[in-house]
Image 1 (cartoon, one colour):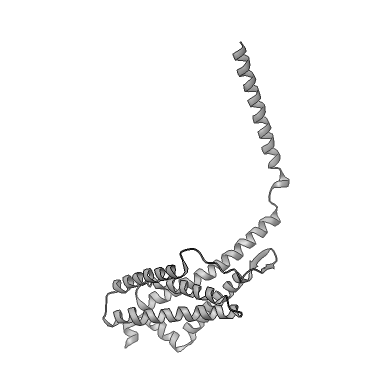
Image 2: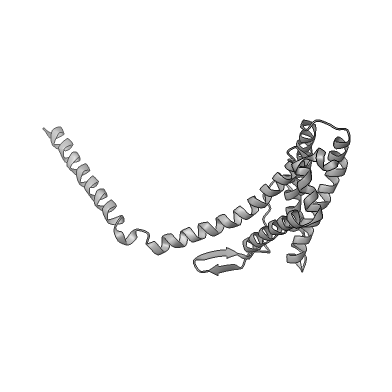
Length: 220
């Protein structure tokens, strides 16, 4: 009898605890704690701004990959290494007084210099030998491995983030964005726009489009 009474009391106590928990769940999900329409709009606007910044960077990279593939006829994996080397060059130049302008200049010069070295040392030689498209692609994979290991030995394998730029947060309505991300969006958009103008309205742009369309016919 005592055992039966103890088990019944424990069941009643367990039932009371469950009702208290259910009541707490109901009170915590009251309308006052639910997100309002204004907060949802603010979050959506912030996510849209973040997506535009990331999309500008990825779009510029995709344009470069597509242009190189259409002209050369093979996929150049070393383009990712060009981005990485340019980023490290910009990171090193951030310690100078005029770090903002010098960072963009250093990134452009470092990426251009590495691209010329790869073109002269690897790709142009393979092109003169009329190698199959698979061989330059494999050579680009090997070049990526070499560049990544050199960068890892020079700067370490850990992530490097610039801390002297982007500390000021700009606010445009509900959107908050650092100066670094604003500069990233504007620079990527400007470079893509200038590249499109060069491809459409310049002589070298017409030659690039001709080679991309038919390389053999363009050589004639």
